Image (cartoon, rainbow, N blue to C red; front, side, top):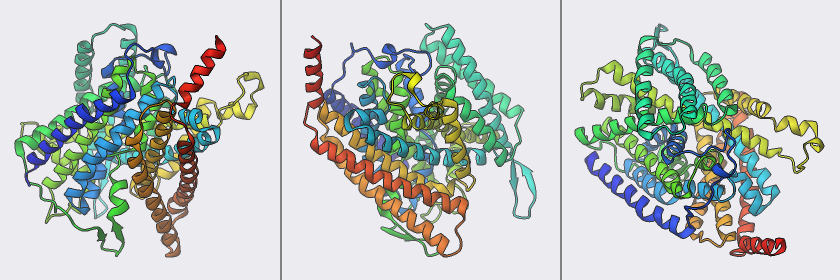
Length: 580
C-alpha cells in the first residue's frame, strides 16, 4: 500500500478523534471558562505560572514526545505494519489522549495536585504512598533509558570493526546545539519574564532566530566527548532542571524545542507526501515471532508495551498533572493541551512507521540500523530532496532525535523528585513538629540526588537492556492512572465509563509483560549470562513494580466499586452548610 494513503487515513482518524471524541469528553466532564485555575490561584513564579495556551501545549508536547514514538513503532514493526498502525490509532484516540486529558482535567479541578495527590484525596493516603513509590521507581527507568539514548547520540567518537576510532561530527554538533539550548532557553525565559506582554508572534520569531543561530554554532563548534562523559553532563543538567523555576528553564526550553520538533514532523509529513513511497513492510508476520537465538516474542503483550508513546503512556499523566496543570490559565485550553498534544504524538508515531516501511528490506526492518538511525536517515533523505545539504540534514535530524529524549528527561527528573517528596510528605502542618529526617527526604535537592543516582546506575547497561521493563512499567502506570481518574469522575458525579475498557486491557497487558520480564531475567542468571548491574537491578525493580502495581490496582478498584456517584459533591454541599 502507498504510504500517502496510510498517512491520509491516519490524519482523518486523528482529526476526527480530536473534534468528535475529544470534544465529547470535554462536554461530558464539563469545562468552566470562568473558573480560576490553579495557575492563577496559587501563582508563585516557580511551579504555578499562568501561561498561554500555546506555551502550555509546547511544554506538554515537548515533554511527552520523547524517544518512544520513534523507537516503539519501528521496533514493533517486526510483527507487521497493520497491527502497529491499528494500535497507534485506536490506542492514541481512545486510550492515550483520554488518559492525558483526563489526568490534566482531574489535576486542574483539584488545585493542580499531582495524580498521586488526587488519588490520596479520593482513594486514601495508603493508595497515594504506594502510587508515589511506583511513580518514583518508574521515573528511574525513564531516566536510565533516555539518558543512555541521548549520550549514545552525542557520542563524539565511533569505533570501526577493525578498532579504528573516528570522530562523529553529527553527534558532536548536535551535542553543542543541546548545550546551547540550556543557556539560550534561560535567557529566553528571562526576556519573557521581563516583557510579559510579548505577543505570540514576537516570541515565535525570536524562537526561530535563536534556533538558526544555535544550529549554526553547533555546526561550527562541535563538542567531542565520549558517551560515558555525556552521561555525567546530562545528569548535571537534569539536577538543574529539577530544581530551577519552570519559567526560567523548562518552559522556554520546551517552547524553543517544539518549533524544531514540529519542523521535524512537517519535514517527515511533507517528505512522505512528495515521495509517497510504498509500504515495504509485511502487513502481518504472525502472533509469535522467533529470533535467531530461538527466543520467542508474543504479540500479546509485546506489541502493546513496545508501542507506548504514540498509543498510550503512563508517563504522560505525570506531565499533565505534574507540570502542565500548574500552568493552564483557562480551563478551555485543557482539551487542546491534553488531548491535542497526544494526537500530534500519535501522528509522529505513524510517520515513524511509514519511514521504516519506506526503507524496509524484504518486508522486514533493516537489521543493521537502530530505530533512531532509520528515522533520522529516512527524514534526512526527504530533506535532501528539497536541496538541503546532506551534513545539515543529518545534523538537524540527529539534534531532533536527541531533543525528543532530552525534553522528556528534564520533565521526568522533576517529576521523579516530586514523587519522592510526596512519598515522604508529612501529615503535620507545623514545620517545627516535622522530624529532621522527613525534612531531609522532602528537600528538593536531596530528593533530586536520590532520584538521579539509581537512574544513572541503571543507564550503564544501555537503553536496550531496560527498554522492555520501561515499556511495561509505563503501560502499568497508565492503567493505574485510568483507575484513579475513574474514581475521581465517579465521586464528582461525572461519567467515567469510557475509561473502564482501556484500564482493564492495560492491566492485563502490563502484568503479563512484567511477569515475562521477571522470568527472562531469572533465566539469564540460570544460564550464566545475567549480570548484577543489569539483570539483577532490573529484577529487583520489576519485582517491586508488580507488587506495588497489584496493591495500587486492588486498592483503586475496590474504591471505584465502593464509591457512590456524586459522593464528593455531597460532601462539599454538607461542608458548605456547616460553614454557613
